[in-house]
Length: 202
Image 1 (cartoon, rainbow, N blue to C red):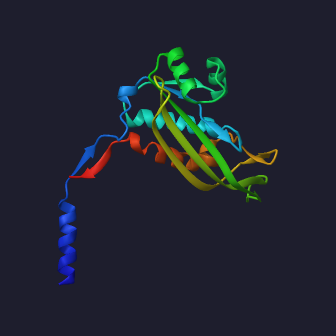
Image 2: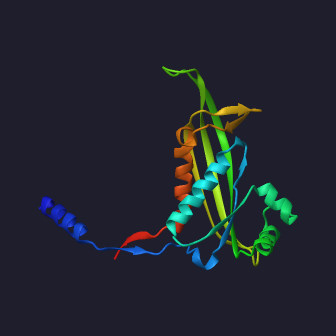
Image 3: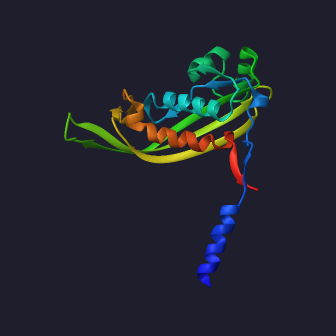
């Protein structure tokens, strides 16, 4: 009897119908959207640049036809609009300067860094580190400066080819994919979830 119930459940599950639901955040009403290179805390190197590029690729892949205006380094953008931080006034000034209705900004925080030396079978020694990284991305209205959307993700990974500079990790490997690509991909996948269509049961 139990086996019959299980077979019936599997059959019903197999007959379930699915459809594609639109993304929770539709970017089309906000396009073209400016993108400021993410900032990073407690680390040096190119981690924030790699994360920004992966985020841009994921956003463009999720919603075809939108346009991202990549503005570059956050400090340079703030200096150009005469603001000390990426707040409401800065968002409004970016809108005036670049004629965009919204801007993506992001911030990475690196913590719990635990480095260790590794002696591989071939080649010289290098440093790996277990690190925790939190990524927060916001979509700001350039009309009001208010937050239209925000999402965060946190991940802990062992990453390779990490240097230390002033006691802080330095993410500057020649091949980010090999060194910390999995970490960045996970963070970006989580924060862009709302941008992708979803398969739902009907």
